[in-house]
Length: 492
Image (cartoon, rainbow, N blue to C red; front, side):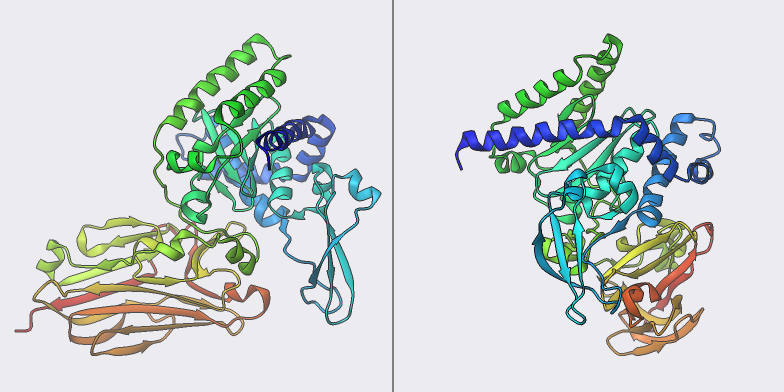
């Protein structure tokens, strides 16, 4: 394809999306969107989540409300669509290609229609890919395009400054401006993720090229918010020249700001200066940004290579004794799912954030938070038939040996789900009862030991949720139900 043709296609995409975002500014449509939101409930939750010192801070409350809005949208309002399901057979249908859009489909921007057929009874169904946010308020289902489209409208309906963000490597999300932080926040409604811009680079393993944000006021190249290695990204950006792209985004921004007041234009300029300064700073991966994609069928995610860098590059954690623990002959590690923290009771109550930062081996595990039920736990990733995780303590670098282990193994099951625990070393192996508390195991003379859990079985599409580890209420902040305690000493 010629360079000029690539420029034509690129600028058409910029122009189309810069026009599309004006649909979010329709006051009638905003009223419809706002009516869908349980605003009083979300505000009450936002106020509860704010610290006592920030409850009276309206800007902090707005940011807290945004988090609640993301959670509500993912868990209660919108639904992910992979394939159609047969209402008669209650089975997934097979994709049979694309169909011809009807006049009504085209009216709501559905130029693409996916056809499905049931292999058992022959029933058919169709899925129009609506691009009109008003229609999406009714259908409430789709993939990332529909999710971001509808969520951005709802943000504008609640008077957030919001931008629709298009990733040239096939994803879409939203950005919302935080008046408290004076910067744009990444908001992915498909993942209920807020302010985790390196999620795609560090977590999903995407090789991003162009990431462009669109609003009623501007078109901005925001690629540098979402990437770490600028040199690698620049080498991948070969569709158009950097100078040409900057000219086009500046052209569209000038057009969009042609009728705004001087004071508003000054505000937008100050925001832009702050944003450009932010792009110059090196980005470090934060907690939560190393996770793989959670939205979409497992096979589909695997095909796209978005299951997560964590699964591919995870480095096992092996716990070894500190000086204080060597002196006392005891190692004690506890975990809380509600806080997603470990506390090392035997070494001054040192805290380690995030469950994955303490495990030895892990396969197909994630931390689930049920905001409607206020519960948290470790579970199998959706679609997996089995999940494993373990914790290891090692004395190999010392002249000491393990004498005994005392463990608490909290597992919750539903239907026929199973959680199987065991603790083993080079010379010992003991199967533990699921749910046991302070269970003692003789590991005499062992140099190391591993506590492991395997989650399996369960029923139907929600089988992954029928096996849970360390389930507890999110309001329970002082109880650490999972406990791994080792007593050790010399051979004499």
